[in-house]
Length: 107
Image 1 (cartoon, rainbow, N blue to C red):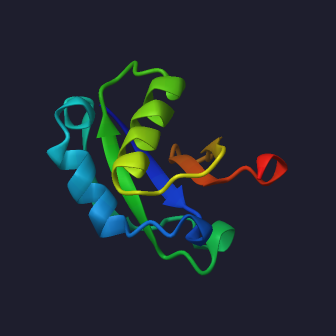
Image 2 (cartoon, rainbow, N blue to C red):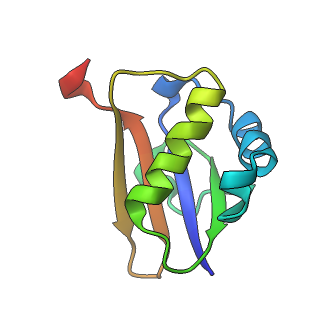
Image 3 (spheres, rainbow, N blue to C red):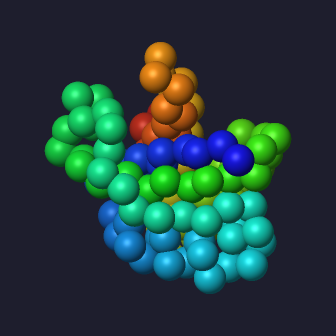
């Protein structure tokens, strides 16, 4: 199992607790991993964000599949934007971050 820290831009207006609940309630997303809230380990990158979502996903899930699952939960919670932007960072300590924000080029 691999863990991803999911960081949402405040611009998305997503309540993290609501996202975790929705992820874990949805069969398709929960089968791919359980979500939980955690303190960010990358505070220097994301001030003022101090809480992230950690999803332990099934090893081998494609990044695009993970992004699609995240978009599905965002849509379920009413967060709809023309284009959601995902960026994955692999830190030297092994932490895998997925940053979710609005694609400013397509607004």
